[in-house]
Image 1 (cartoon, one colour):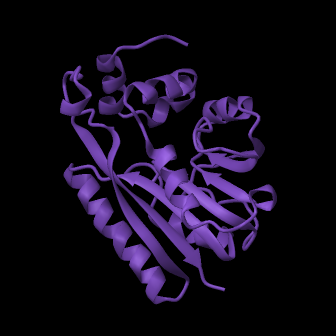
Image 2 (image 1 turned 30 degrees about the horizontal axis):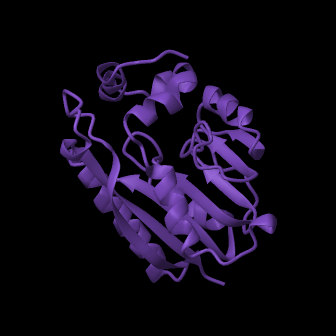
Length: 219
């Protein structure tokens, strides 16, 4: 693990990091800490406002689990990067870890089997296809929760993706598949990597806002 500068981490994001996720895995958490990535924290905070089950007997599926930032207990994790899964395994928080390129490979989990399904940061253009949201719903038990936390970026391709994702989420509501419990807006999802220099004063930094969605699957 190396200590990298803001400029070095920024370059990883600008150039596109999907092909190098395996190589990035050892520095992943440190780099995201530098960018003040708060997605997992927001996700857990909002989720727990709606979760009423017994954590000791709860089955959780963490999709696009990365190195395990969301994990607070033993869960099953799915990610497209073998390197990231190795980092997640080191946390000792997961009961099971699976390699899967979402959208190209089906989510190989049992239907109606998880009390909670989570995704933090994965629903973006070039990463998780919007169609995968239906697989998340299918994996969730009736009455279970699906929690998605994502950044609201201002680039055109992200705005288009946001629109299509919202249309699909709403369509699934109208089909009676689930009920939207919240779409909570959060102010500081991550530092905006389009900023060329890291502002030393945190109050002056440019942050990407985000949204945390929680849906309850229909019984």
